[in-house]
Image 1 (cartoon, helix red, strand yellow):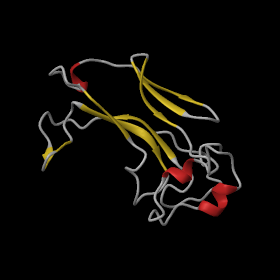
Image 2 (cartoon, helix red, strand yellow):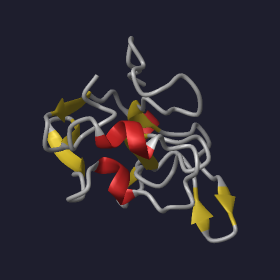
Image 3 (tube, rainbow, N blue to C red):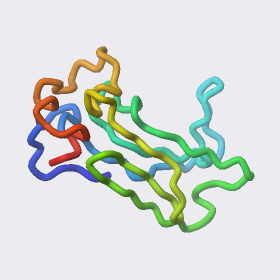
Image 4 (cartoon, rainbow, N blue to C red):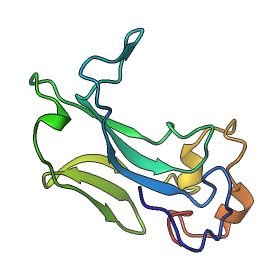
Length: 130
């Protein structure tokens, strides 16, 4: 995970954001009801609120019977004022772009810990402009 040094949008509840480049759980079989959380599921993306930490996360599910832990991979990101792109082995697998009102506009209003007033003073990709 990448975390800002200055935290100009706040220190608590991921108010200044963190970027999860890639994460996969170790279990081959890990389900909660119909939801699969096993090692064939790769997660990544921006986190801006602890309670809503999954709202902007993207998933990449392997369907070839392999697991993410079966091989070595190169995980990377492209981070620009207009978007955050996640790549695995050089191939884009996730893209997050801000709404017209900014990245915070992609979160539901129920995400109470997002410092919307502070973010409005930043760029469209805030809080990832620190």
